[in-house]
Amino acid sequence: GEDVEQSLFLSVREGDSSVINCTYTDSSSTYLYWYKQEPGAGLQLLTYIFSNMDMKQDQRLTVLLNKKDKHLSLRIADTQTGDSAIYFCAEIRQAGTALIFGKGTTLSVSS
Amino acid sequence: GAVVSQHPSWVICKSGTSVKIECRSLDFQATTMFWYRQFPKQSLMLMATSNEGSKATYEQGVEKDKFLINHASLTLSTLTVTSAHPEDSSFYICSARDSVTRFDDEQFFGPGTRLTVL
Image (cartoon, each protein chain N blue to C red):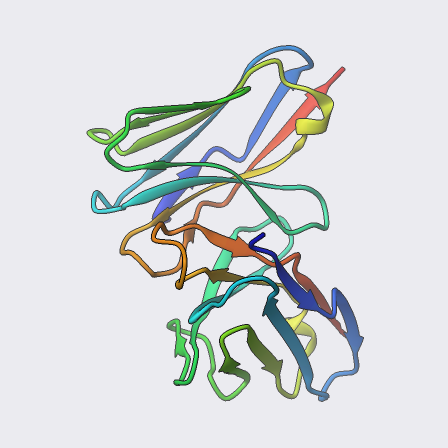
């Protein structure tokens, strides 16, 4: 099965909060990341969290990490139509190695 | 800072030809770069790890003779798709670590190259 799993779709109304969930399997992961990809474009790093942290907040973004359950979430407050994109969670298992990506969650924001 | 460029951004080629894609770190040095490919509506799959001055490390199932990687300097890695076929059509993305001045594991991604093989 997939090493990093995400739900594939999320639909919200403008102004609501969005919560995108991710589960990973490698407890030795050092960093966990959230990337955003707009249609036809590359990846934009949104935020990341070090594995010894439980939460990180950056403006409208809140990342929660539950190491026991190997669960990572990204909350976007006051979601805007410009937030519509694919969101990937990713992990790094050993320093200096490549990112392992989930399949991505397509966020659709309706006005 | 920490900008990665890719060239070309898109390319259309005939089946059987070879295509070279460049990945450059513009304002930092990268001893390690990574090459990913992404099929439509799918995730990024790691193809290989490119190490400056040495051979690339390929992931299982990736043909090293078909996807030639050269990392000749600290700011440039190239991926050459040899004898391209329509099934090679994909979005190719590179990333690079600033391994000289940064001690975290942030990787910086290029904008991607869309390859279409006719």
